[in-house]
Image (tube, rainbow, N blue to C red):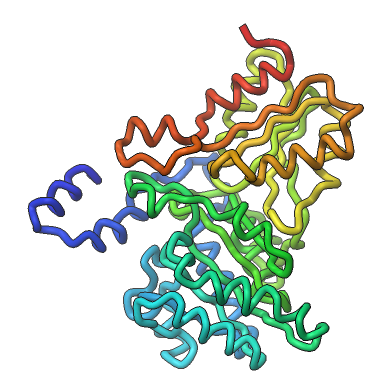
Length: 366
């Protein structure tokens, strides 16, 4: 379908912006056993914002097309009608402008949730995010808090080229004063976004476009309006004893599928969903490695100076004597993202890459 839409765009019959808005609807949802309560990541994010706006009149949303269009990916659907234009602001296409306004509002005690249509566009506003938001608490000797959330899709989607496919987890996670969260499931999305909005410090909330339409089982606890996940705490998605696989965002699903394939070959893999990149849950990572004696890290971002590099450094520093094999690091290719579908696939980690690396770590590679 995307191919048909692109051809129409080439023929002049469809705007490029319509392509961008249509992508979210083309992601198929994961199926689960009948009777289990499910929620899409999109609905989880929407409900979290709605509940926090309802609970705290200081919370408001701003960004491009968040109001009348209800969000490029429908994350803010229904909020304008419910809360009005004073709390759901449609902004001009000027990331530097509306991000600066959001930071100023946070200085004044409000709690802005700033949406970027993609985090690639946050580069236009990075001075406000880092120099204005992240550093103000330290530079004011703790007198100024900046309770602001910067959220939107991050990393690769499908067929959108180098300027719309970059992962910024490592960029923002290197900055003192920021907290960086990376949800995977609907429970992650609800609990972490609520925590981010309630937090007194600036939070970069990195979502994944291809996960918006995925459905996940969700507990009654997670559906409660008071539900909140702790920032800085990873989740063990699958327990194992032979190898530790650490990853975040969309790659958690890939790691879980790889673990299933490894189990068929008698390898028990433990899968850790980081949830939080900064602060990083080094304790959970190292405890797992000390149990399994092997480490595989996975991320979509560039390999040099990446999140995985930091994880590997932490394990070498704290758990080196427990390792029975060299650490394995899987990352995106060290090139700008190709546009061609076959090259795009080669530039991103795949399930088979995780399986091969895990087998190498267990000395089971052929």
